[in-house]
Length: 87
Image (cartoon, rainbow, N blue to C red; front, side, top):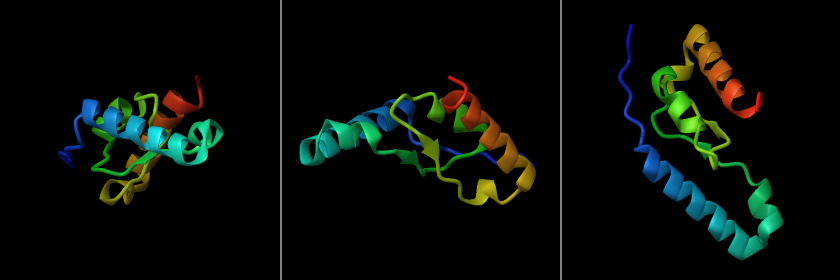
């Protein structure tokens, strides 16, 4: 069954993630900003995971209903691993 999911537009995700890092930097310093992990938790599906995790500031995704199917969950984990761990 195909689920259509609409995540926030990539430019918006990128802009907000950069803003989060900037605020953490201003409050706690560059080391903290570099070490904080930003997880995108909007509507994440297999179809849009790659585009989301390709954004440098995004470290991972938080799955809701699309993570309830073990096969699709494994596929999403594979996409994240390819973008974040294999580089």
